[in-house]
Length: 287
Ligand code: PDD
Image 1 (tube, helix red, strand yellow):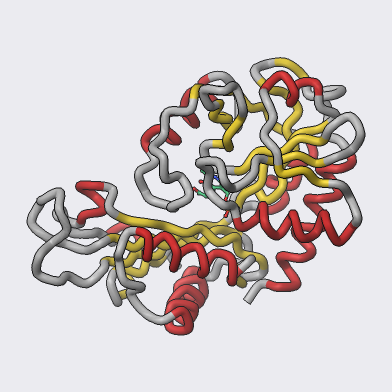
Image 2 (cartoon, rainbow, N blue to C red; image 1 turned 180 degrees about the vertical axis):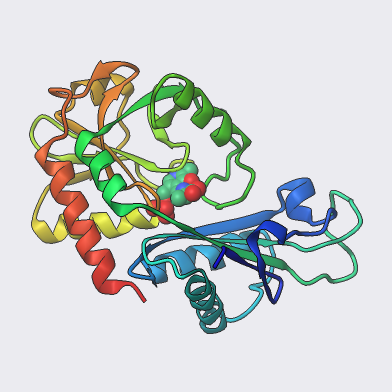
């Protein structure tokens, strides 16, 4: 059986699923999205992703297309129809379909919603995590509301492509003061020489990563020290370890920044442990 997509109330064959040409998400990036990791066919970190979806929509004055409970049913049904155990669920909600105009439609329109599901090879993901990945840095050039998870991802896409062309897995944006904000699709972390974990605070113009929050809870439970404070690429190179977090990356060790090794240039014990702890917690709490 092939992949199935949910499109505005219907389950359709993935290859044929389509949205209207005047969907405001398509024309104006007037849309938000969420991504859940799937463990054994269940949604990881459900509460954090639902809460952020509601917040992103409310910041853009787009109504929730359905209740959280109904949305959970639809998400799980889409996962079930795709028969995916390990993977990612993508949800996108746009303001809807209306004749092209920058201002919101004057006649009320219903939000448009699509869901897709992608399988992930967990064994390959674990092998990648065991080796670690490289990142590059690139000047921050995104808008000032990166806390809203909109589909306006052109700077992120260009940064990720630049990373790929240089053999790296992620690009870290660096603000005008020289501090790393976050990755193109992940949050950025380092481990200081004294073992303190460091990641940028959420007053900065970054996405409030759900994986980041769950990991902060886990770190505090283990008694490890953590400091929500920005770091520079130079500090990352001088750190003992670095890693990125996100629904796709989970906790992924970073072994080089702009071609320079982080610490000994190999995957370290802190990131390895945090990846294991995160996956355990995500499995326990997935719905
Ligand atoms: N990206 N920062 C950015 C810019 C992101 O796009 C993401 C997630 C994160 C991590 O957030 P979370 O832990 O809630 O997944 C941080 C998703 C996975 C994506 O765009 O596919």
